Image (cartoon, rainbow, N blue to C red; front, side, top):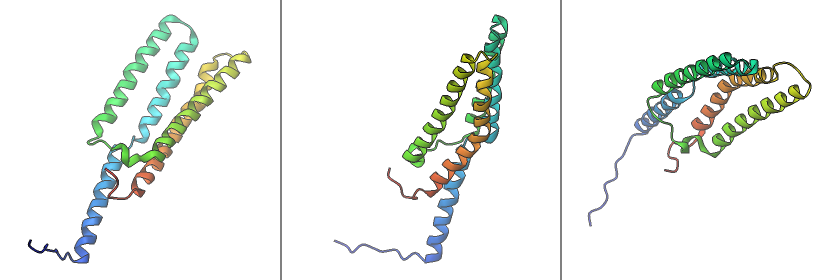
Length: 162
């Protein structure tokens, strides 16, 4: 059996190759993070839709629903078209998944809890008022969430489990 040939790669070449791999990984991650404008757009659409529903006027609710559906579709389409590749779930990891779940649960619980409390107090337009802090949480927390997920993904080893 022939002896295995060992390639002797100079350290500088290995460092340059690793730097290139890291740069490409960073590019893939940055390309696929949800942009800051997405969170603000969804927050505005959400408030408009809930306000339309809160009026209880049939035609306002219908127009609000159509505007929300078309607006959200356009926003999602814009984000999907920008993303050239898909980040693998293994790159986000369990901590990333739990972070996303916690972010969602906190916003939903805050909105529902506040909405019920405002309704119990007889405050007019309780759903709309309860949606405002949730929308602020999306608009300001969403980009923070993306920054946190970026750090998590960048901290993962280059040769992670497949």
